[in-house]
Image 1 (cartoon, helix red, strand yellow):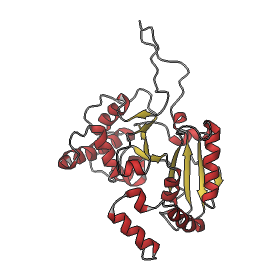
Image 2 (tube, rainbow, N blue to C red; image 1 turned 90 degrees about the vertical axis):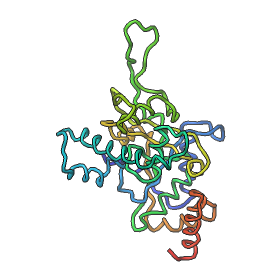
Image 3 (tube, helix red, strand yellow; image 1 turned 120 degrees about the vertical axis):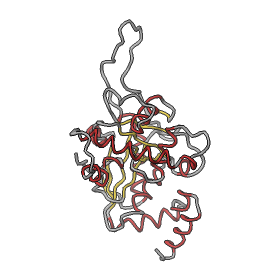
Image 4 (cartoon, one colour; image 1 turned 180 degrees about the vertical axis):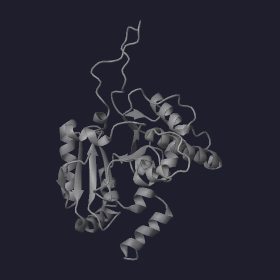
Length: 286
């Protein structure tokens, strides 16, 4: 589905007002760490779709010489497992010592392999930066979400026979990266440890440990889109996910203002390559 547009952002001040409004909607302003997630996209026409469900990957699947099944979802899973296994096998010597499968899958996403992960951030200005720093010829968009409402609210729990306590199909909120669901689904899509997909697939919000580096600087979090899960856009009807458009002419002025606020490529990626890019950009060399 195509999401309705909740508003237009013409400057950093407009965006701060959106952030403040969302905090007032769900949390006590000024207290704690509000669980509101943001995602910036350079092209406002793009949906909230992870890499393995985007057109380039789907085209590769459709044009594959080996069509193992008429089930389109299963064919996608077969092809993504092939890529994941190659990444795990060929990248074995480069993974940090002691890395588990979940961390390796996060690293695959981090380094550009198509996965079922979609990047989000708790850093609102980082999301705004990612929106205005790419696709300069297009209107951009920032999405704002309360991740709790991405999870289905199952009115009736499933009950195991003879059990005194109800067993719920879904977690009540975003889960940490060591949650069994994350391990199971990651193993499933990698063709390794996971036994099966969730009995009622959904989009699972994940809050990883904020280790030093990009994950910490960018306030990283993810949604994991299980095979056959409904689109994340479907929760927009409940006003728990909103889309704000940044008009193309406002992108560069907003990016310059963010640089003045020390929100830029160099501070979000923290390496010399991105520092050099930021300096070149500041002096009109890019």
